[in-house]
Length: 240
Ligand code: ADP
Ligand code: MG
Image (cartoon, rainbow, N blue to C red; front, side, top):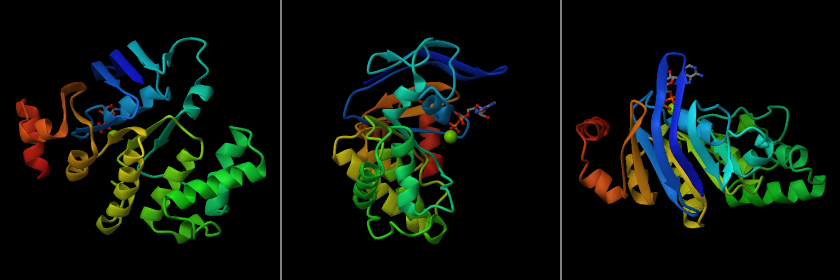
């Protein structure tokens, strides 16, 4: 489980996370929505230790992410993160790209890494693209490759940061379908997204961020059906 306790984080004079409290249970799908600059991406990068925090605590399966002595490389193996865009190595095939981290980070043999990469690429529907170069794939296929690459590390948690935001509209569906599949398999996920229909369908809970504060968190029907704060009401009116 991921436990976030009163986390504060500033960039210079700008306080970006203003005391966030949040627990994500094993198997839970949490969606994070909110306007640009509300702190959504910063939260994800603090969870996997890419960014330090100023105060509070983040525990992942009981390990304090930001404590001195925490082995961040070890921790990050359990936390897959996928961004808007991932620049694959252009001179490597899709298969070779996905094999890289299991080889280098987990120390798998070439055949073990290949087996894992084939398994995960097949899982996201790219079993016929193994020998293709990334530039030959659509944006949707590239995002599914990025997801397969994260899954190849056998993570316990997956963090998704607006993985469909850079895609042409007709390619969004295939990537959301992949996320739906992972959710239905019981993967513990935090998804930052602008796709409200997706958030409503797939989430166990939805969190609304506004100016560094988690202004509301609730089950999707409650959050979308009866938003409590004027900020969320305005946000939802603007996205519909
Ligand atoms: P969101 O993902 O909700 O759009 P972010 O977490 O990316 O918001 O950013 C929150 C605020 O922090 C924004 O005002 C952004 O400009 C600022 N910010 C994010 N990363 C940095 C950084 N590395 N250095 C300085 N400011 C940053
Ligand atoms: Mg962001």
